[in-house]
Image (cartoon, rainbow, N blue to C red; front, side, top):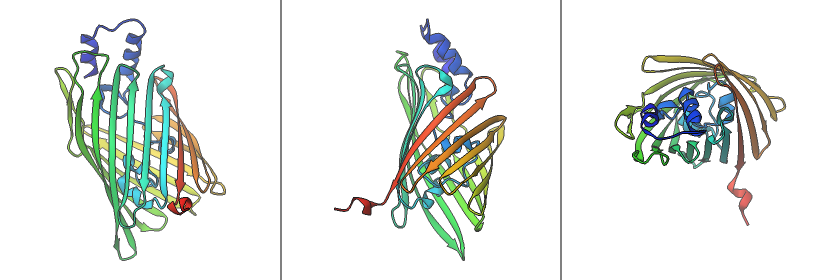
Length: 294
């Protein structure tokens, strides 16, 4: 899709090399929404997060994880992609711990400032079923994709809805297994002449927690003819600081987490084989409504 836009658009000067670089970024080429900012913690863990997700970013990774959010939570993140001026990825997410159904909503965006924008709006809900003493967490995220190209006069803004569904099962306290299906409706986007469809994606994952101090993670995902293994590990010291490391396909990731009873800060670096390193920072707040009583 983007190749078609570049071929037809009279761009020149500095903007042309930026678009050429953009085509080389597999995470965000062809309006496939894969370069979205889904939080620094998962990024540092090699994107192996479907079984661990327990914060507002569960909306992106596995909506079943919303059931683990016990406080009103807010998360925001900014990322400049690969040091390219004007090429950014943004995220804002909220989680609301209502008694029977946990809910959340979020907005993510990848943009080449003034020229190209991909937005996704998320609305999620999750709950728990008990099979004896085994919790089965399940949830869904309704998404609305929107693509706009203000820098190209002949391209119209397009949008489509979609749905993700996820499950987390804890057969024993230390082990969580997960299954996620993303892009269930496989929406299609057509900006000029040719349209492209998002592939349905499947992910199975596992998280083993050793003494609630170390989390070992693995995800296997596939879409169409492509598949990938992701791995991650984090170790908490005094429930305050955690170093993290991961492997997303063939690319190394690393980062850290800091937290208190009411705030979190997560950082991550992602090493791409061709494009070098890119960095992501996420800030979060957690609170109870009782904290605001007069």
